[in-house]
Length: 300
Ligand SMILES: C[C@](O)(C(=O)O)[C@H](CC(=O)O)C(=O)O
Ligand SMILES: [Mg+2]
Image 1 (tube, rainbow, N blue to C red):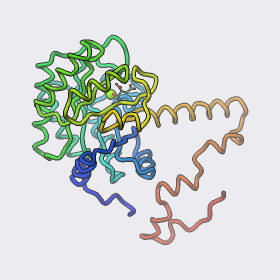
Image 2 (tube, rainbow, N blue to C red; image 1 turned 60 degrees about the vertical axis):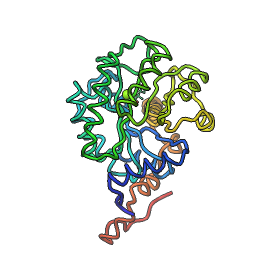
Image 3 (cartoon, rainbow, N blue to C red; image 1 turned 135 degrees about the vertical axis):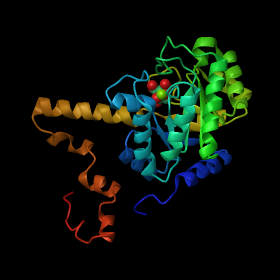
């Protein structure tokens, strides 16, 4: 299979089937088509596109500086390269309820499998930072309903509502909001920045809809293992910034090495080898179209 042979609609249906198995699904974060191909190769269940990483990669902090078109285009590039379902972060939905409907429709047209919309006030911030503010419950309900309205283009598109209320209003209020968001049509709840195992347990017990948990590093939540999260009864786990943090650290370390030693000779082992890169992009397979494409030998 040289090009992904799975339509966006099939990916959305596959996500629903996978959720029904009751198995905890792992969605690592991807900010580029090539990383998504690596995620697929490692047999993960899906791909997550982080708003934070799209912002950061464009040189901005995660405060809502990106536009709907930028996010949608990046979403399309990433989602189309893989047969896995891709869930995208649309932050606060890029405006008023009517904009939220438009945003969801764009994501459907761009081939995404689902998205999450959050109840933060603009300018938003990482859910694991202090000093967040959230919009009123009624206002968020209008946004959730508007997101669900956008699903008219494809009923299998998966709408996730995120609440940042734990930090501002406490756990009970966060539960109350989550229940209201589900009643308004959200199919899954992303509960942001719970602080301990007990809170994860209580939240799970209170909400019957599927739950998404965020295992972002250096934040407020402890980094639970796959088995712990599975035993807690969560349904989707995202690792939104992990690959990006790894790549950035490795890249900066490598740049320093060249600056300090004048050569990259000693860090070759830390790099993705040309051979592995060519294997990931399926270079050789393009000979199916033209025998002169992959007609060279590679050094080890
Ligand atoms: C999940 C998240 O919304 C994201 O954009 O990836 C961020 C992640 C992070 O900043 O670590 C979040 O608000 O948790
Ligand atoms: Mg985000």
